[in-house]
Length: 111
Image (cartoon, helix red, strand yellow):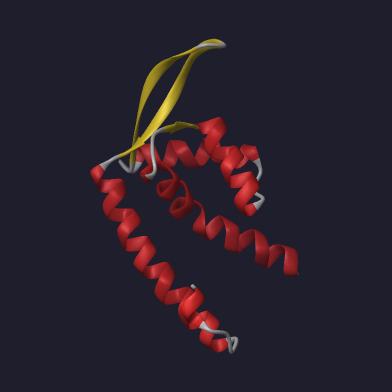
């Protein structure tokens, strides 16, 4: 049961995490997947459908850039709509995680 909760929590914040990464700079899906794998232990297969959905929703745009080691790479860039969504999601995350922290008896100042 704990594993199912952990997986659902991770899936619930992936949009936020990806938009936050792209807010730091453009990147390609493989690198985004690597950062997510390292930070929140998410598998690489999760990233491609997520990136397509974020693009369809207008939160990211793409462009091709030549690669020194192979074919051009598709890079993702956060859009103004993505930045607005990121801002809203960050606010909601802080409120939610603070509330959960208080329920658990923790100090929400660390959130």
